Structures are given as structure tokens and as C-alpha cells.
View 1: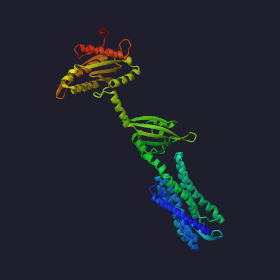
View 2: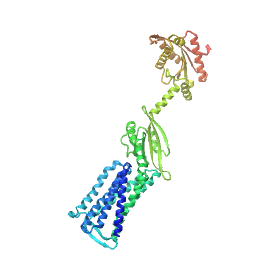
View 3: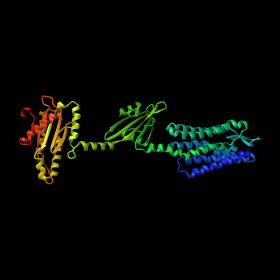
Length: 512
């Protein structure tokens, strides 16, 4: 039996050494270094067990048992370190150093036990037919507490992995379960040996029994590339994606957010460090955003924050049987897209030269106006630049364009923001003036005409002067369509052009 144990210890050591070597040459695989450290601790445990097995004297057995304890107390803390590396919880790495203090203290107390007897109260050698002489250590109260603490570290590593499983999609949970099983296997073997087997005189080498778990972990790490498949990719994407991602629990409390979301919350919503706070309590200025957390289906909305446009997509999260467990909100800054769409709309609906509405834009604006039921409460000005062809022929088309732009400036200075101004084509302009009868519209037309008459500007060293003629009309006593009002204004403009030009004519049925 002793030969069998020693043979298994040698084989285990060789397998573990190869795993360390393989981990080193594949150290770029995420988690490989942490796994190598864990394996080295197991090798120290195995080596100490081998030399203790062949030690003759009690003192030499104690020495090798002490060396063995470096691995015994090192493996659990390495498990915790490995679990944190796997789950990418770098923010908790400092806790590993703190948790390692009792483990390191345990090893120091073991090596100095002869001075204080705090860890062990004594040793005995027990002879068995199957195992020969086996060293039995009698732990003190302090030693028992520290050993129990050591076992608890393995449980902490298992809890870290199980907690992480909840964040994964079903496709990736199997890989984490394999690692969790390996940790649970190592913990169970050590616990059963310590609590049950030693009490009945069975002394199995735990380090040997741990080797199968190490092999399974190595296969999971390198053959299936557990670490590179999901956890690293998930966290990397979560942090570098140019979208804000906020995760809420079922009560609307922010439980996770990536860096982009935190910046957006700070810059656009003036919310700093929302983690752990209810979204509806920290975001009082945008109630429509708060309403999202009560929804149970996917929703989209858009917020305008001054000159910034933010798109929000809400996704409810559920676990088995459609149980609602929380939600996720994705933020996108769509300002550039909105500006692009706005520019496209301007190109489609506005005149390139004057930036007034073109025919297409005019009809869209008019439809919106008519749909609000305001047709019977407006006046129309139809305007034409006098002798515009002569201006083009005399001074050139560039001068004609300058006149059109100058006339546009005059119009914009006089009309209201709710008035609808359009370059209808060539030198013809139309203005729809809501809530104004033709008598008042005539005064507006005269203001525009007089401003043009008094206006002059220099273009290409030429003193440019021009005049305009105008026709004014409204719906009249009998309700009519807008096309009819437009026809009236056109007839009035024709009369103005037929007179002396540079005048305004109000449509009258008597003049027809």
C-alpha cells in the first residue's frame, strides 16, 4: 500500500508539473497564470506528502508535514484568486491579499509551533497494516479555527463561481459548472478525509485525489478555452462598446453600468454614481425615462437634451417561466444621426439658395397646417421680383442669386416664426400668414415691399436695386380650398404686375 501511495504521488506530481509547463507556454490564455499558481501550490502539497511517506523519524515526518502545509493552506487562497480572475472581478483583488493573511499566519505558526504550541498540541505515529507508520497531528483550538478558515476559502471560491453563473446565458453555464465541480470536489475530498477517514485510521493522500480535478480544469481551460469564449469577451464588450448599458433589478435599482453609461449619466443627466440607487429617485427631470422601469415589454424612446439627442432602448429581463427579474436600458447618443437626417430633410424640403421651403417642403408644412383646421383663418402673399430676367441678363446669374438671397433676408426680418415662407420657383415667392385677415396681410405685404424699395446693396461693385409686386388673398366670405386661395393671390399678383409693378394688390371679387 505504501508503494502504491508513493507511485500515485509521483504520477500526480509529474502530471501537475506538465500542467504548470503547459500553462506557462500558453500563459497568454486568460486565467492560465492563476491556474499555474494554483497547480504549483498543489505540487508543494504532493511533494511534501511523498517525502513524509518515506521519512523514518518522527521529526523528519513533522518537517515534511510542515512543508506540505504550504500547499495545504495555499491551495484554497489560490482558488479564490483563480475564481476572481475567471470572473474578471479585478476590483476585489485586494481582498485576496487580505484573505491570505490568516493563511500565511497559519504556515508561520506551523513552522514555529515548537516555540508556542498555538497550532498543534502534539503528534503521534500510528502503525497500520495497510499504510505503515502515519503521522497524526493533534490540532489546538487556534489550529482548528485556522484550518476551518482555510476550508471556508474554498467555499468562497465556489460561491464566486456560482454567483457568476447567474450572469451567463445557458450556452456558457456548463463551462463554469465544470470549474465549480472541480473546486467542490477538492473541498469535499479534503473535508471527508479530515473529518471521517482519519478518525477510522484511513490515511489517503488528498493531493493525489485532487489530481483528477486539476486535469479536468486544465482541459476546460486550454482545450475548450473556457476563459476566452465568454467571460473576457462579455466584460470587454460591456466596457468598450460605444453604448451606455444600465442594468436594473426588479425594483428599478441600478445594479450595474458600464463606463460609457456612467459618463452619459453624469454629462447629460447630471447623475453621479447611480449604482445602488433607484433610478426613479435619482432621475427627477425626465419622468418619461422613469416610466420605462414599469414596462414589461421592449420599449424605445428618444430624449432631446438641448442640442443632444439620446436614444433609449428598454429590455425587460426574465428567468425561467417568464419571471421578471429586472431590466436593461441601452443609451445611444444619436446626435450625429439626427443632424444627418436633419440635413437630408433640409436638402429635400428647403431651397438650396435661399434656405426657404421649396415646393415639396411647402406642401408638407401646409398639410400639417391644414390638418390642424386653420385653413379658414389665414392669408396668402404671392410675390414676384420685378424685371428679374433683366437683372440676370444685365448683371449675370450670380447677381440674380444675390438679389434672391437679399429678398429672402428682407422676408425673414418681417415675417413671424409661425408664418410659412416658400420660394415657389424662379423669382416667385409665397408666404402663408396664419390667423391674419387679408386687410392686415396687406399691411405686412406693404412693409415687405417698402423695405425692398428702400433697400440697396452692392454686389460685384454694382449698386443693386430692385422692386417686388405682391398679390394678397384670403378665404373670403365663402369657405374654399387652399388652391382657391392661392388662385386668388395669383390673380391679385397678376393685377399688380399689370399696373405699374412695385405695388401690392388685395384680391377682390369685384375686380374679377
